[in-house]
Image (tube, rainbow, N blue to C red; front, side, top):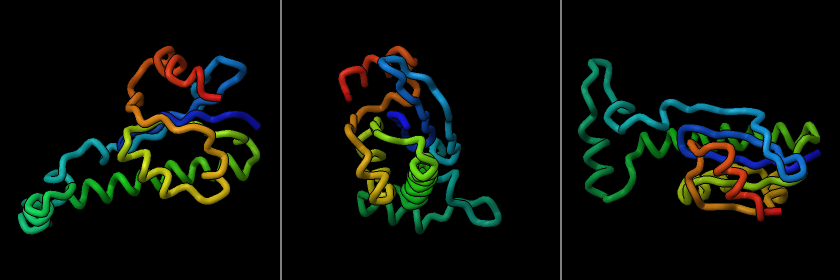
Length: 142
């Protein structure tokens, strides 16, 4: 059992473990749909964008519906991956690093016992950062 560090955004999740002070990347999850724009996600059979759903989302001032749905799907996928690690007795402590919005969605998708293993959260987008940058950002989090 060990400390997992999850570094994620809406399209990519990287899972590290910490052995003493050294991080090792063990897994990576990709969600290409998380990088797409609303118009690329919402099309009808002819390939035309549904104006009603995109204009409704835009006029309400909220985030686009399809983009939000894809982000939630990925948060659920990441949470399920962490759940599997917990039930396999690999996960003792968990540190979450993600942009604020995705961090909130991820917390919402974690099951209770896995959420209880979260010892720190860092609201920052480091999903594309180097190993050294990530290690420096979480070095004081124990």
